[in-house]
Amino acid sequence: MSIDKRHVGTPPYNLASLIRGLYGRVARQLRVDPSYVSRVARGERRSADIEGALEKELRRIMALVKTNRNGAGRNGASRGATASRKTTIRKRKRVAQ
Image 1 (cartoon, helix red, strand yellow):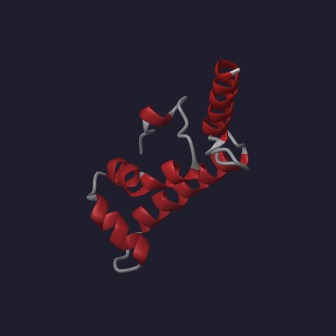
Image 2 (cartoon, rainbow, N blue to C red):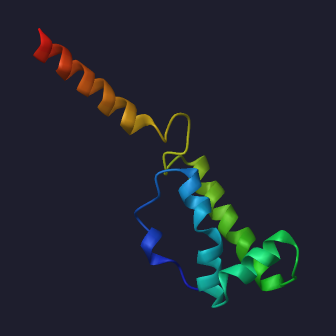
């Protein structure tokens, strides 16, 4: 199994981004169709290799969340937008005065 180099060093912005590509990443690692990975995850099909790869990828995602490297912690997803909005409001107040 190879490491998905696109995600090394550039963690996604939130947990949803991490989960969103789960089946695709596992499918690429094992060279199978993502719909088959989905069927295994739902329990419609059985594959020890795919189940193991899913568990490994989920453990990696949970480790990222626990170390809070991806902004998925408390208010992480909206932190940048909130700060930007506050700055814009301050600028408008200065212009109005």
